[in-house]
Structure formats: C-alpha cells, structure tokens
Image (cartoon, rainbow, N blue to C red; front, top):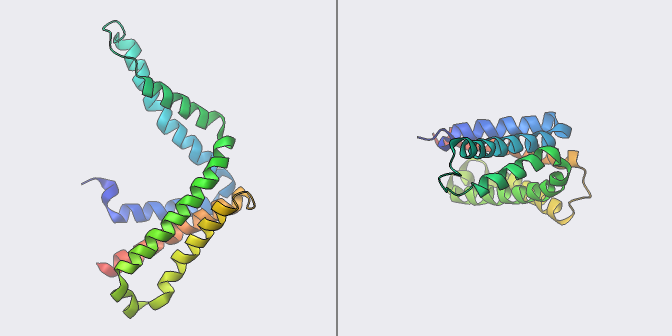
Length: 171
C-alpha cells in the first residue's frame, strides 16, 4: 500500500504543514516555492543529463522536451518566486474553497453521526474556511501575504485536527 494512501499519514502531514505555515508565515511561500522548484528541476536535469551522456542523440532518440520545459519551470520557481507568490494567492483561495466544500460534503455523508454527537457546530469550521477562501478569491490583494498564509495554515491545521477526530471516532 502506498504510504500517502494512509489517512493517518495525510493527517500528520496536514497538521505539520499547518503548524509550519502558522509559525513561519513570512518564509512559508518562498520556501514552498523553492522546494517545489527543486523537486521539479532536479529530476528534469537528471533526465536531460542522462540523455546527453548516454549518446541517445546519436541513436536518433528524441530530445526530452518535457524535461527541458520542467527544468526551466523549476529554475523560474527558484529564481523568481515573487511572481509565483502573486499567483499562489489565487491558488490558496481556491484551495480554501475546495477544502471547505470537501469538508461540508464529508460532513453531509456523516449526517446521522454528527446529529447525535456534535450537531450544527461541526459545520461551522468548513463554512468559515469556505468564506475565507471566497474572500481571498474576490479580494486577493486586500490581505497581505502573511494574513493569507496564516489563514491557509490555520485552515490546514484545523483540517488535519478535524480529520484526526473523525478518524479516531470512526475507528
């Protein structure tokens, strides 16, 4: 079984990412973009170097164009993260909307259990997350990067804690 299919691993990762975003909001987005740039660029560089060193060009094998494009993308993430931060604001808003909708739909599947145990209070967090995501998408540059990252960090942390509680309760 794939490790990331285990719900407990996803819960722990969600809580860890949420805490990191809350504790280091100013460094969070540039660091995340740097890590993504490295994770995209290094395998692409390896593929291109393997192609060049193996003599595949002499055997008329096609050049790995996708790897070259991904290498350029990874380098741009590493070298110009500020442009991607502007784009990331929309991604974070969209992610919050998706997280809120997902949690609402998940809670609706557990309707009978929730009515007995927690009632309407369980719907409060997903609605707040959904509204924050909509606010960021509608007015993305009114909030600073720090507020957006802190909001996303809090949402991710609460998402992990909520999933952990449901995981424990359903076991």
